[in-house]
Length: 475
Image (tube, helix red, strand yellow):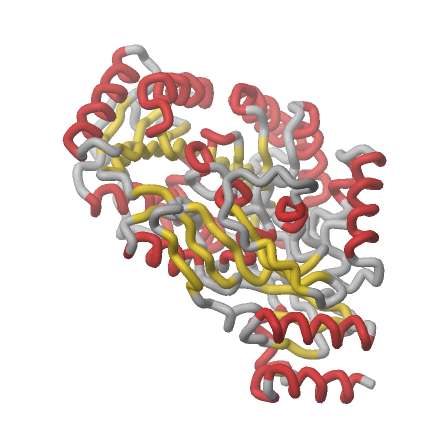
């Protein structure tokens, strides 16, 4: 009986944290883009690992599926239930404590519900850096970041979330607690269970805590913005920066001019970096946003960045460039990049693609796919931006000017096929950092081999034989 199940859940977490009213559940049931609304028996809000374990045990006993949720900022419908109304959401937002900081070991142990921004702040308070950086860092959680193996802007230097995690605590599908909160950088004692749960989108178990890597705070972080004649120039500039700056290059973001114009249209308070400053190149098709972290001094960092930019201009790899000379200027340049998604939303509906391509093939991919889409859907507008340094593009398609968004969205399957087929041709991935969730669950079958899918299903069956952990996601 559902009433018995809810009464048992109330005994575990308290009746105030078992949400059954539609008005209370709504924020947990709708996706980040406000395009899908799921249904749930209840939203459960535990405050400890022990409570999570007891709730999962109750789910197993009553044969009720559980959907783990962090900040619910995902874009592939991975953290909300379907519309059957037969599952519960298990939100970890109350589990938001920093448990320990080991400065000498450069590690921090946190609960899964900690906001990413709070983890960054806690690290900075100890003169350390936690480098994961996302536009949603004020609302996404570490548990969600780990469950999707989030990327962000610093992957070029520090890697995805997987590379920033040393150990996990996980509640299994049976309600047992695996304590793998090890702070070791070397532990070669069998299968790496940690890596099974990272990126699994809550389909194998619920991450409740993690040991994260910290790094020394750099003495200076320098940001620059370069105007480029084409995507090939972006690749040339990236090669130059990697050669000259080495591991101090922490970010290399590609931004199309159309993306920038959308931001300036919807955020008029922001300023074009080259306002009135490059008459010979009034509207270059692409820009690059660069950041380097230096452990010597700010003076040294600025001199090095300016030297690289000067060489790029002299060699024809950049049409123009500007280097931020203050924190506020740096923040303004990053604001242009971080506002693209919101500017798109304000402009209208669009068809999103989170893809990865070998870095060397990105210019060719853009050229070929732009042409295919233009031929098939005349006038469609490409919003191309992303983390070129690690091969991750957000290659989004908007409706032709003056046309109906609703009619254009109906073309999503055909547009996806063009984009994803090209991704496959270039030996890329149709999901770089957002995961599969419900949105790409069936799409991935077109591009992974049956053997690979079978191995994934075998792991799922072994760890979650009742299929109660976030069912209908990934597989």
